[in-house]
Image 1 (spheres, one colour):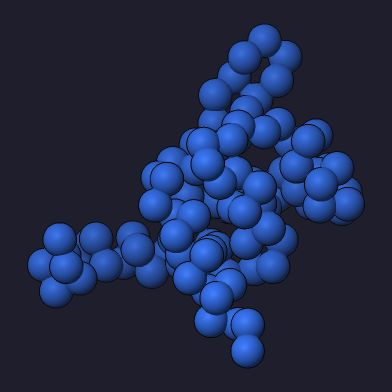
Image 2 (cartoon, rainbow, N blue to C red; image 1 turned 180 degrees about the vertical axis):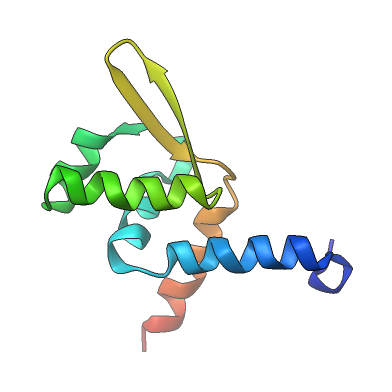
Length: 99
């Protein structure tokens, strides 16, 4: 499917996902979740070295915009990429910034 084949609603959803991703910490979160990884808030916050509440805020935005999904297992909630192809966006942008 090409962009020109998408409806206005699909294009708006795509734009909202890109806006949600457009933050250094959120790009880092996506990179941590590549290759089907599932991580908890605690694991992500330790990797980012920022406050857990800030990490939760970023995860909430990414989940709200359809970038991430979560699954509760016992006491923990695991976050993962809703669409595996989203990691391609991070890889593409990373390649474009090297120069």
